[in-house]
Amino acid sequence: MPTPVRTGLLLALVAALSFATLGIWGKLAGEVGLGTYQVLAWRFGLVAAALLPLVGRGLSWPQRGPLLGAGVVYVLATFCYFGALGRVTAGATGLLLYLAPAFVILFGWLAGQRPGAARLGAVALAALGLGLVVGVPGAGDRDPLGLALGAGAGALYAAYLLASERWLRGVPPLAATGHLALVGAAAFGALAAARGELGMPEGAAQWGVILGMAALPTLIAVPALYGAVSRLGAARASLLGTLEPLFTVALAFLVLGEPLRPAMLLGGALILAGAALAQGPGGEARPAPAPAPSPLS
Image (cartoon, rainbow, N blue to C red; front, top):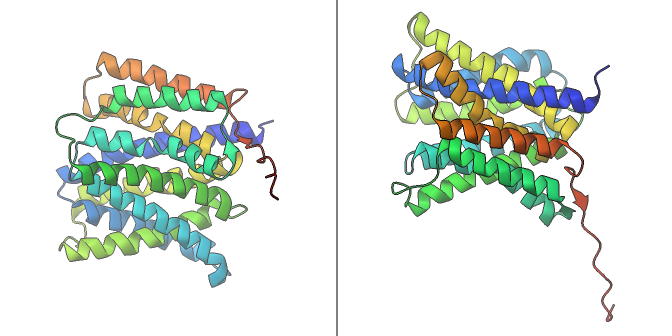
C-alpha cells in the first residue's frame, strides 16, 4: 500500500518529467512560428478555461485569494526568468533558477527551520551537477541585472513552493492549478497583446504545440507538483525538481537528436545523488533551538 511519502516521490518525479518537456515544446513553438508570450497565453488560457468551470465553483473570494496569490508569485518568477534569458546565457539563467532548493532552505532557516547536514549536502551535490548539465556563468554572463533577475527567478520560485506548502494546504490540486492558469493567462495575454503577438493559432502544427504544452507541463505537471509539495514539503520536492534539466537533456537527445556530453552524464549522476540524499535520514529540517534568555529579561 503506497504511503504518503512514496506517493509524494512519485508525484515529484512525474512533475519533473512533465515540466522537462516544456523546453521541447518551446523549441517546437519557435519552429512553427509562435511567439513566446503568445504560446504561454494560450497554454494557460486553455487550462483555465478547462479547469475553472469544474473546480472553481462554490469558492468565495477570500478562498480564492491564496490560490491567486500563489499564481502571482509563479508569474513573477517567470517574468524574472525571461528577463534574465534576454541578458545572460540560457545556462546561467537555468542554473540560477534551479538553485531554488537553496533558497527554500535559506528561507526556512530564516524562519527557524535549521537544515540538517544531509539536506545541505544534497543541495551542494545538486548545484554542482546542475553546473555540469546546464553550464556555469561565463564571459557572456557579466550583466549584473541579468544575473540579479536570474537569482530573483530562483528566489521567487522557492517562494512559490513555500506559498504552495503553507497557503494551499487542503486545497484540491486542480483548483490551485486552475487559478494559477488564470493569473498566467491574464499576465501573458497582456504581454502578448502589447507585443502584437496575441493572435489565433493557425494550423495543426501550432495547435498541436499549444495543446501539448497545456497538457504535459501544465495539466499534469502543476497538480503533480502541488501533490508532491503537500506530501514531502517544499524543500524535498524542490530538490527532486532539480531532476528536471536532466530529463530535459535526455528528451532533447531522444526527440531532437541533441548530443550528450560526458559532463552532462557526470552532472546527472551528481543530481541524482543529491536528490537521493535529500530523501534519506537527516534530510528533514530541524527547528532551530530557542535563543537563551537575555540576562536583562
